Image (cartoon, rainbow over all chains, first blue to last red; front, side, top):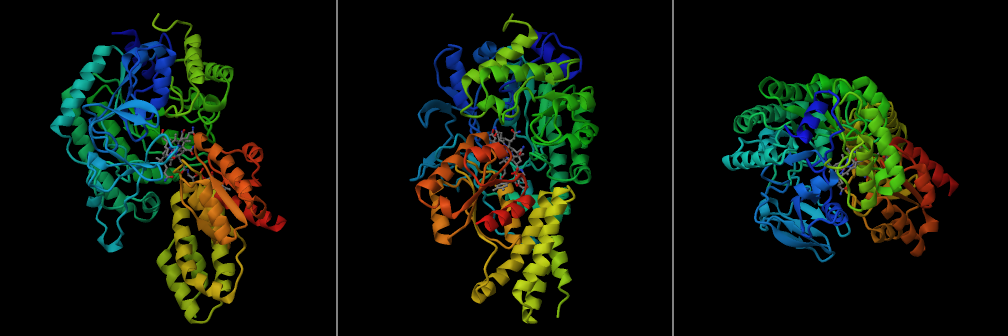
Length: 422
Length: 212
Ligand code: B12
């Protein structure tokens, strides 16, 4: 087995790895904005070519193997065939992204409005109502809420289940090829298959559907978790049933050849608190998370990866009990998320995939030296005994100084006591 | 004569249907709209705010209560306007340019409304010109800016500067908030107030209006 993959597996198994494994670009929550990927390629003097936008919603740039090697990373990603806007990444074409030449899928069809906002269409169909908008001056798309008028007595959970369907052959084929390529690269593998998030607020508006029905408005969804729990249960039950069938099909196609699976991106934390009580987490979400994680553990060697921003320390016990193996992004700047405390309380039971540097202050606004000092400290706290994959907190945002990104990477390598690729 | 305490309960429990029904009955029975607001709705929203602060209520419950209150307020507003009642203050609120996070901003807007303020919500991704336009149109005395992203925090400064250039900065108090915002940052950009939660934002707004 290659060093990178072993390093990741050791850390995920809470064994001390030879070095801290590092992930950037392995998922849509540990990614890098396309402008920063371009800046990093320049910084490391790599071949000049436009970067691929593999995730158009957040405008994340694909981290290819040459950049992965230059940055000294250990993880590569496997992504579902379709993007957030419901079209596959195929037949790349050039696009002028406000002055930066990038590559996008042929189905990335946009229209610029008179004011400079850019609209994008679901499934690459410009005759459908647009499902995303990039405001002038913004670096990524926001979903356009397309909520049809709700009639309480006509509410049907089926309407919210349109996106949960058996995985298609083309999707399976895509996963097989991607996993084979990822294996060939020798890196540790984080895979995303989709379909098991349960109420991820970024997915509720369904930017991938042409005509979403049911509850698609953000506030209406949050209210429904309190006022219509039965409706939400019906959706989750259905989603769980389909999700488990799909996981079985995916596993039959790719086997145990990925290390971790990004199963759930539902955010439960705010800066100072949570979106619901522990009691609600247990009654509304826990049964489904447990069913999915139990299936994964009973049938595969995959580790279960959970993402939730914000202040979620109070939920850690429940997440662990539900069978999640990995927590991301470990937002240490949120209330109650002090790194020392998290490591001491949960470090032997859950892997911290993230938390490497503060992204609300230090990484975007600090000096390279401040970045270095913070990264070294975080490594000291999180690294002992494994159970740590280095990553910033959420995607690296547009406008983050490249010198700070490099200072962050150099600091992990300094801690690791080794040269890149040595 | 309906049992008015039920209006308090309906707002507290986020039951819009009942809130609207009781309000209608009360108005039909000749109850003063101001009494409904001051004695029942404002105290109910105050209670909601404190339940939120002590983590008994969360975002969903707050949104439900706000919706119940709004349903009732919609019936009362035309009557209040006709009677020439003055709101606690006139607020223009929005999430700044480039930022779509609006959950926190919506809660602040609702709590201010619940606190007796007249609130004009400009939504998310609001450019400075829109704030200026609204301040003029509404003769506002409070501007609330929300930002959840480090990359959009600078837009708070730009907005305050634009208010200055447009000559309306002196007529308003500017309140700022949102996950990455700190009291220091609020000072730095020349805001008049900061709060880290929707419930405290109401107290802050009342204080700033008094300062005049
Ligand atoms: C929910 C959420 C989303 C939702 C937003 C849905 C919506 N319609 O609002 C979705 C999934 C769409 C989303 C998208 C993104 N998000 Co987001 N999101 C969050 C999350 C988890 C919670 C925010 C929230 O709603 N909190 C609940 C409300 C009630 O709290 P609040 O907003 O803080 O407001 C309270 C107080 O701050 C205060 N307040 C708020 N405004 C004001 C205003 C005034 C005047 C006053 C007095 C008080 C006040 O009162 C409120 C109520 O008590 C935060 C995590 C966090 N730590 O906050 C990340 C977070 C804000 N997101 C983040 C990011 C990076 C993004 C994306 C850029 C993702 C990406 N592309 O990589 C996109 C950007 C979209 C955009 N254009 O803005 C980062 C920002 C990091 C940074 N560097 O700044 C955060 C911090 C997550 C993280 N771990 O890093 N997000």
